[in-house]
Structures are given as structure tokens and as C-alpha cells.
Image 1 (cartoon, rainbow, N blue to C red):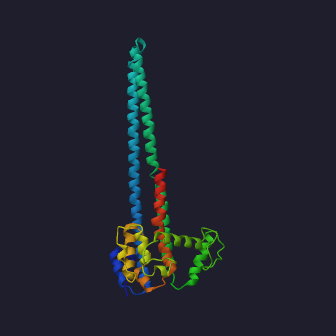
Image 2 (image 1 turned 30 degrees about the vertical axis):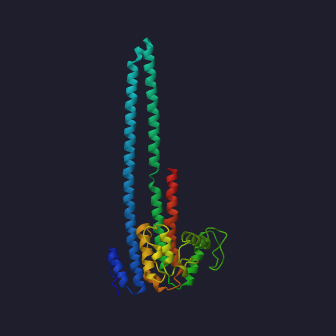
Image 3 (image 1 turned 180 degrees about the vertical axis):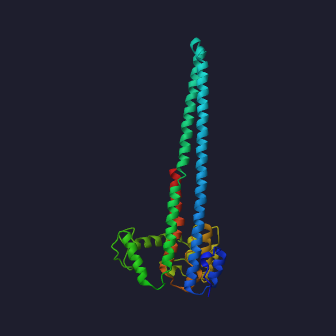
Length: 313
């Protein structure tokens, strides 16, 4: 038995991981994993706050640079106007004065065009620093982590709970809530069944050509850890040699995939290696499905969102 009386005061991930390795009861392990997720969420909020402060500093610097440019423009214009006043007599008396006035007018026009260009550049830079989008994504990710914790706490053999969750998701997607888990793909692309099948196809495309990987479902296809390794290797192939992996080394494969996913792609370890080993050749598909959704978000959705944002800028 592991002493969990003061677990809410423990902030050290190393200590919590040590407790997790020593824990033998499911509820003990669940409580420790929940605390680990809470710590990760807290650190995520701290990183968000640091990023927000950095964005504010950058915005202030942009405004200051913009103001300096505006002050320089005013000084330049004033200089040209003063020069024009002193050249009035020459302009009336001879042709040289006229040419000088034309030169002053050209310089004034060039200053105006330079000012307009600088203002447009600063406005584009300012538009690219939108904190609202980051805060909204942070809140969405926090909500998904909390929902994942609740789903993972369901008993592994509770088909009634899984079916109830599936019905609720179907209703949220605009369905009737009467669909069964055995039915085919819904005509509604946002239905749970359609989402599940689309995610499965995405996994198959990402891992196509990898040896010892044949993803046909969210249960037995992931039992030896090779599918997880292939999925993360497709994103960061330089981190390890996939051809050296052995399907029989399930624990090593899970450890490798989960660690690389967290360290290199910031994918929270929603699954536990020991639990995957205990579930054998048919792990709970709901747990695997939830974790794979994190891969899809980090490897597919977020890069596309960043690319779209860069194109807008």
C-alpha cells in the first residue's frame, strides 16, 4: 500500500512516478496519475502566463518603435517645410529656385510613402500577436485533459458506461443518441462513429509501410506498442531507429513511444505502461482512442493551425 494521505501536497513528478511504480491497487494508481495530470496542467498554465507576458512585452516594443518612426517622420516633414520657406525668394527669381522646390516636394512624397509602408508593417506585426487565440486553445486543451481523466477512471469492463458516453457524444454531434456501437459510419461527419473511423484512417495513413504494424482497430492493433512507436516515429523519425524494435518487447515499446511523445511532441501520457501490459492483447479501446486523439491534435491539427496563421500574416 502507498500512503496517499498527503498526495495533494506533492508537486515532485519524480516522487509521484516512484509512488506509481510502487502502487499495486488500481485506485492508488488512478489517484497518483490524476495528481500527475494536475501538476502538468499547472505547469501548462505557468507556460501560458509566461508566453502572455512575453507577448505583451513584444507588443509594447512594437508600439514604441511605431511611435519613434512617427516622430522621425514629423521631424523630416518639418525640416522640408522649413527648407521650402527659405527657398521662396530663389523660386520666384530664377529657375534654380523652381528646381529646388520640386526636389523638396519629391522628398516630402518619399517621406509620406515610407511612413505609410512602416505603419502597414507594424500593423501586420501587431495583428500576428493575438493572445485571445492562445488562451482559447489553452482552455480547450485543459477541458480535454479533464474529460480524459474522467473517462479513464471508468471500469475497464463497463460496456454500459462506454455505450452511455457514446450516446451522449452522438447527441452532441446532432444525432439521435440511439446509435449502437456496431452500426456503420453515420452520414453525419461529426458523429462519434464517423470521428472514430476517420481517426483510424489517419493512423493507417501515418503508419503505412511500417513493419509489424497493421492498425485495424483501437484495441488489439495497439497491444504490442508497435503502432504507438510507428505513429510517433512518423513525426520525429530522427529520435530512434524503428527497425530495431521488437513486437515481443511490449513494455520497451510502450515506454519508448510514450516518452518520445511527451518529450518531443508535448503529448501528455494519458495511458500507463503497466496498465497496457495488464490489459494484454485487447486493451480498452476507449483508453487507446482517447490517447490517439492527442496524437492527432498535436501532429495534425496544431501544425495546420500554425500554417494557416502564418499564411494570414
